[in-house]
Image 1 (cartoon, rainbow, N blue to C red):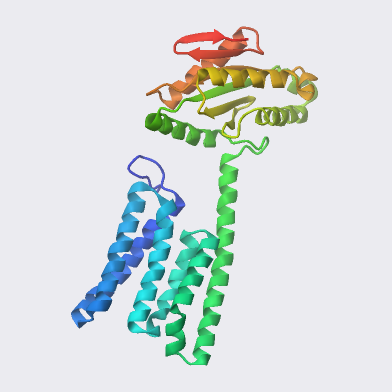
Image 2: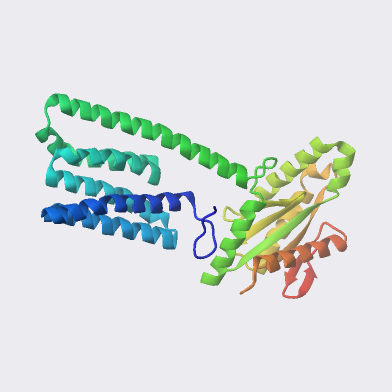
Length: 336
């Protein structure tokens, strides 16, 4: 079953891990707090209740806001501080809680952060461990801690690597190396939210390769693939670091330009058209590009925005190719 938040968006893996970890720890700690209240151990009961309330709050914030950037730190640090508190309160007999907390750190924070948190936690516990155990027990404990952290580091690093690889496969076009349509969908959602929040201008340039099918049919699919790769290379070299290039489908590509009004987007589109026109490898196969440009309007949906920029591209194609057309409200203005 797919988990979604209140905005209808899928919850991230980090969001689910942090929320479920907070819930699990809270449910485990609560019975201990109640038992210690009954037994009259009010100091430790208070610590347990603080752990319960703190982690429950972190889990709720993560679940409601999806803000894992902050809560991943909080859950790891708070859990480690909780272990330190109970060990100093009751002695080294409770140091066993350190092991699951160390494992948790590797799965809710970055690897280097987990190593730092675990190392600092171990240093804080060192006086109690040395005080309450003989040298043989101390050496065994440190051996177990070292093994736990090494195994957790290896497993977590492989897990993160596999996750990043899957994310890349899901969002990157395997031929050209640029972002694919799945990634574009997410970018469009982000652009809509940015426009609502800050009124920052955002524009899109949709471009299509002219005469690509002819070159592909005459010279073969390998040449066609090379042309697609080349066009991405030329475009990437002529857009800003803040601009994003996506393969829209077939020989169509789209550039999302954050912070660009319509006039700025038109200048960039013309720069792209001329760069392709003057590129020798593309010129040798007679390939040019037609472009459509549209700025995201206030209250406009992603679908309506794409439809306007697609209509502008169609006008460029219809008026002779190797042209740029701007969608200005309901008007189409061919600039070249």
